[in-house]
Length: 353
Figure 1 (cartoon, rainbow, N blue to C red):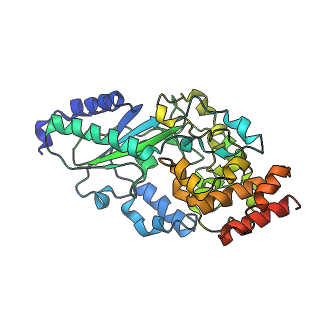
Figure 2 (figure 1 turned 180 degrees about the vertical axis):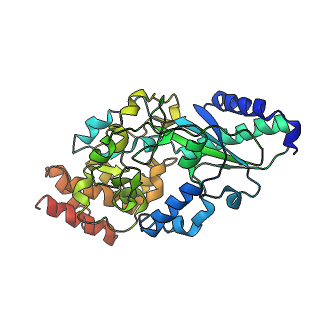
Figure 3 (figure 1 turned 30 degrees about the vertical axis):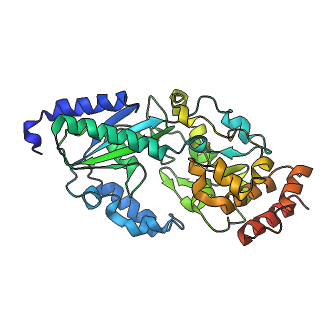
């Protein structure tokens, strides 16, 4: 299409309004020139801080060069969607009770990918109704995209010292999504940094994964260890995981900007299967069939049953040596998976059984 015959400023304003009407909290428009971010990405990869996430290196600069991912891209429409569930058990209460399982707040309810994609597609459809055919592609963490730098460049916030995106009015409890497009829309001003001298996230990280302000070593991160890593969790890191069985929110929980975070109005993000306050023993006793049934439509399913048991075994080993915990672990000693068996034996050793 010929964007020269379109009032692009009015279109940009309308796009942001439509995004809010569709349920997003905010939208912005980025000029996808990410040279400095590309340099940081390549240095991070060269340092091996991506761990076993080999796909990060395979995709290389596709993440930072939008036109390589979608030819003809001139702008990226970035949106955010709040996800903090209003009806979940208080996160700190769960973390402080070692018999309970802590699941990252984003994974308590429905997997966000389909919901975000459908809304982004509706936004693209509304744009098409206005301007006619145009080239675009929708992303919801579904391709190699530097979504946080793009969101920052689109004015949605800044990348904090914990490497998450922060917004002055909304904190960090939100998902991001993008539309890559050939529309020559006016770009927004990038967000400015407001972390100041605060280092709450660095001090709170259980494993020291935030190795310096704005620098994360994924190999130490509990989210990586419990979600991305498919092999054994390093033994020296297991005691530091506590009762976190899927992801970790500590850096967000202590961030002062999250006092401004609002609970989501999305019913789909409400906790399912009592995962906001379930006991470790209860979850460890799920059969493989129950795991698949109970995690249907959940982000948790992607780690698979064996890693689910691996994670919970570690958490049980970090908890009190009650009879129910010991019995649950002992019942898995002969599990077919060597990965599960090894973590079970470690946990029983921690409990001195």
